[in-house]
Amino acid sequence: MRRFVFLTLAAWLLLGAPLHADQVLLKNGDRLTGKIVALGDGKLVLNTDQVGQITVPAENIATFQSDSAIAIHLKDGTVLNQPAVAADPGQFAIAQGPALRPQTFALADVASINPPPKPQPKWTGNLSAAVTSTHGNTKAEAVSASVSVARRSEKDRTTAGADYGKTKQRDRDTGEEKTTEDWWRAKAQYDYFFTKKFFGFLNGRYEKDAIADLDRRVVVGGGAGYQWIETDRTSFSTGLGLASLYEKFDVDPPADDSNSQISLQAGYNFDHRITDTLRFVHDLTYYPSLEQFSDYYLTTTAELRASLTKTMFANFKVIFNYDESPAAGQGSTDVKYLLGVGMTF
Image (cartoon, rainbow, N blue to C red; front, side, top):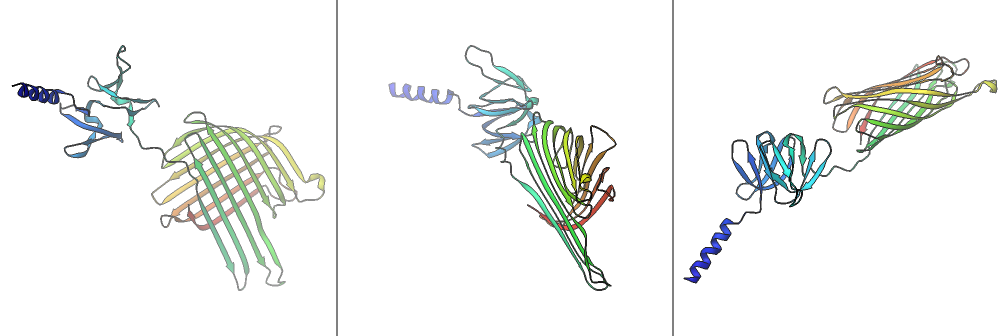
């Protein structure tokens, strides 16, 4: 008899004891029991003993609770690492201790639960080049190349790039070889994000153009910017700041061979994927002198890039520069066209 009573009491305790499992209460009254794996993209994944892993639309959930701590990320950036307690429909709660009432949150404020770790920032970029060789009535050789790299993390962004072009042509009558194009430029910028949209930046660029008698143009500056759009398809940002601009020319007399000024710098960067295979990239920076706004340097680049394979592309790039104070005897406007094939990495 004692043995019977003991077994009955043990069975009652086992059956009456709460099961250690997470629970999800649906709006239709159904209750799902298992282990909450994650919530993201409007779907909750629950691992159950009966049918394995199931997916539940977040819009169908009335409330939920967890037996152990889970990482609940709210839309305002708050992260809760505690067990969740069931609450009224449309809400959940976090226990704050035996003497305190649970703190309640709206389900609509949840951005994700147990999200996967963010991928480590890495460098990405592209490289393109073109070579042209003409023989016969005209003998000419031209080469151009472009490279750009970028690294984006949650708090900062680094971008850099360089372009190069050179063309030689031989006179058919004299046989003299003449260089008609010889230039290169490099630029870089570092952005630090104080908020999701607002950032400070430091940047610089270096340019040479033998045909325009430009020995070097050095620009170093900094300021503040705003990231208006940043999605997988479109990126658009603007910036405003100050810059030190120095130009040295290969001219005579030497007294007129340089130009130095403090300028404002204002510009934007636009990157848009028109289709899955066609992309448009455009940037512009304007440097008006603080002493005289009519004395300015402006540079802008527009590129159309068409994907050929997953890593290969064809591109057409236009570089437009305008210098109000060029080398003596040279024009203010300079336009370069680059057509090539490249790869991403």
